[in-house]
Length: 183
Ligand code: IMP
Ligand code: MG
Image (tube, rainbow, N blue to C red; front, side, top):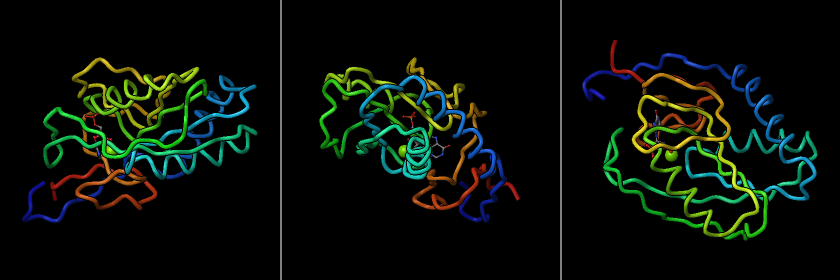
């Protein structure tokens, strides 16, 4: 981002459209998980917090009991580009052995974060491990990762709001916007 100009937020997906899509998405997941006594939902911090909170309340409507946990991974490097190395900074404390498990993140970009997290969780032997992202930027993929559930497929733009940040800012915004330094 150009430090001399005020960044501009251009709305990409508004709150109401996010809510509509989430209802469909959770409906599909609930159908696949129906009959399960418990679904473990694991969110990747920090970006998934708002998405996960809204999804959790929709699972409640579908009478699917949840256990919710979080893990945190970080990629080396600053700004909007990462160096490609991912490390875990917080593991889950819930056992997922023999549990129907859903891994959730805000956005699938190069794919490295979700590939790392999925590989890590698979070693804990869940009975099923499904992956879900709110946003997918397929043009940016570096590793061949495919999410089982995708909210929206978007072009290669830097997006903030609804949990997604730029340098720690904008996570609280209810809409998803493209961050641009063009006036
Ligand atoms: P990946 O490992 O390259 O797939 O990156 C995924 C992570 O990068 C996400 O969890 C986000 O934290 C961050 N990220 C990638 N693209 C964006 C974006 O457009 N806005 C905000 N964060 C992003
Ligand atoms: Mg993130």
